[in-house]
Amino acid sequence: MSVWHLDIGATPLPAGVRFRVWAPLAETVAVIRCGSDGDTAHPLARAGDYFQGTVAGMAPGDRYWYRLDGALRRPDPASRCQPDGVHGPSQVVDPASFAWSDTDWRGRELEELITYELHVGTFTPAGTFTAAIDRLNYLCGLGVTAVELMPVVEFPGSRNWGYDGVFPFAPHHAYGGAEGLKALVDACHRRGLAVILDVVYNHLGPEGNYLHPFGPYFTDRYRTPWGDAVNFDGPQSGGVRHYVIANALHWVAEYHVDGLRLDAIHGIFDFGACHILRDLARTVASLARRLGRKVHVIAESDLNDVRTILPPETGGHGVGAQWCDDFHHALMTLLTGERGGYYADFGAFRHLVKAFREGFVYSGEYSRYRRRRHGSSTANRPPRQLVVFSQNHDQVGNRALGDRPATRLSPEQLKLAAGAVLLSPYQPLLFMGEEYGETAPFPYFTSHGDPDLVEAVRRGRREEFASFGWEGELPDPQAGETFRAAKLDPERRHRSWHRPLFAWYRELIRLRRELPLLRRPERREIEVAGMEDEEVIAVRYHGGGEELIVLLAFGSGVRTVRLPMRHGKCRRLLASADGHWGGPGSPAPERLPASSSGPEVALAPFSVTLYGSG
Image 1 (cartoon, rainbow, N blue to C red):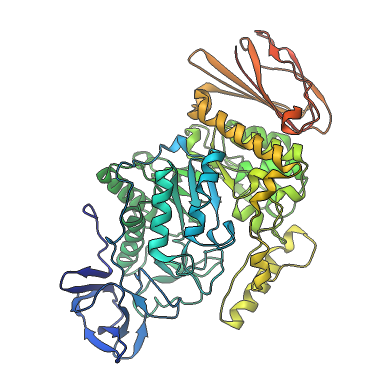
Image 2 (spheres, rainbow, N blue to C red):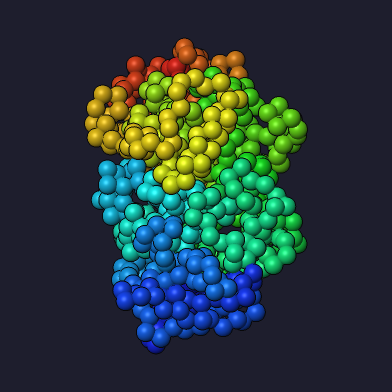
């Protein structure tokens, strides 16, 4: 807080509470203090497009509204707390009240991140920040180094994915509010876990969005599938840009988060000379330097636009990393055979080979799904700038039934998917429960209060899935049972085929963390070969006199391949087909002699085999 403080919203002072709100559309603004003996009004003074002032006698815990033009009563756009939900008053929070214990925490380097994405409401039976703390030792035992929280800001009701949030500065009261989130972050840092927060800057949710009368936060010049587009480049957009960048800094400074995952930046429209993403990334980086911490900005985008992660001096936005959906699509279409919707662009073996070599599969090629050329090349970007996965909340939850890969793939295929991600050159991300083959679905769920909105969501989900041809009755997003069905059962990891799968994930993560060639691979140290007839991908890492060879076999029968790359003497470090991992037995040799032409290697169906120097 000594480095940066939030200059909008309610800020406690020794003499009262200072209020500041951007409201260029209002003629007058007053603070309405809620009291047991009645409400009292305190006018604020205009300062340009802002209204501000200090209300004596107010303190943390007090509830308040803003009254616009003597008539409209609205919550604070920068509210730190909504104790009664999206339709209730805001509450003053003391940002300095929490006793942090992470003074020595400096964060983690980008290449160190092995990220575990979770939804607070379904991660534990209680579905709170406090309950999540009780499972952090489990995550440390798994070996991951970062926790990524799906959006946690105030949304309508008590259950939601989080992308319908309408108070970007207020952790949801049902999860445990500001104190609960700070306690979770602090507990993560004590265990060496970085925390990445999913934030949504492309829209606000439809219910409880009270920003319109304050100012032109939104624009009709652009459209998003989720709600009104945010006004980043139109008239009076300066206050909007301030609001969003202040929000990013708020999470870093007040909540000590180590990274921000920017949701769907393809829904962020800015045709100004300095894109909002560049401004945001630059400002966050500046704050991180002043705090002496590593803070990462990571984007989600379906644009395949390398400019997102290029540095500003070469015309980019300067974002640290971005999700790579192409890797997921290429991997899962090979394993499942699905070709509906956006999977229509994938399914060929060469697609996954290119994903391993470059990252983006579509780097200017024609996309049949989009009916146009799509993407630019990431071949020259450091692999750590791309986040890859075999599962995430979208790729599970945006299926009609929210069904997980563990319900469609065999244990051998699940181990292969895990090996492809965790032994890839890229930054790996896991979705909660995948490490032991969770079979509970993760469907879309809501708890809206507006009946018309509820019906619109139901109708929209049906229309969204039409192009995939999925069958089955859609779970009702509004039903409580849809939410409860998504709760994890981590005890599953002790039973049946889940046990060796869990052990397999732990070993892959251990190797990812301990083997130098996997910790920070560079493009010049990686060779990728695709043997299409045999359905085998070989990846060779080399440097400092050491080497690793990863063999990924996607065929349904035993394959014998001649390695198309020179290498030194190697020993087998890992084979997913070994009985130790629940496999049928690996035919791969224990050792490979040094070779310039490549020895023959027999590989089990749907298997991962890893060789290393020695």
